[in-house]
Image 1 (cartoon, one colour):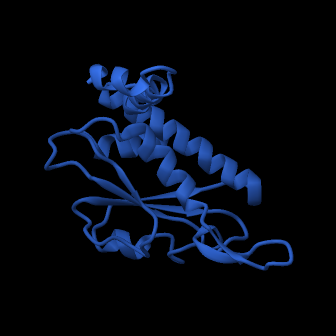
Image 2 (cartoon, one colour):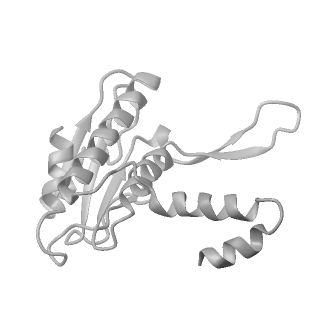
Length: 177
């Protein structure tokens, strides 16, 4: 809950004063890397746990044009401390990045939160996903919106349903607009 409140405070005030991005500094093992697929082909696939959290927050909160919180997953640090926050996530047995837990970023004046997760593996990932769910719902509450309401998706579904109707779906869709 403390991490959610930290982000909510950073999102308060005028648009010029708000932080627009949180740089998610996950352990090295959870950052993107190529992995060989099981089986005879040995084809490579990209696996990146950080993308779960980026999508989880941005999809739910990206519906308000006057509010924006981007989750940046590809940086080793901040590029603009006036517009970015740093969330350093640590889990036992995993390689923390940055190794100092964000102390150098803090010393340089950055707004940094360190989140220490319990356990390793699925337990730690589950705890992080739960934390991001709390963050999502808390920010939605602060912003006065519903985190699970998706008007563009529902509109798209209605358009597709009209198009798929037998006997004139395309004409009905044109009339819809």
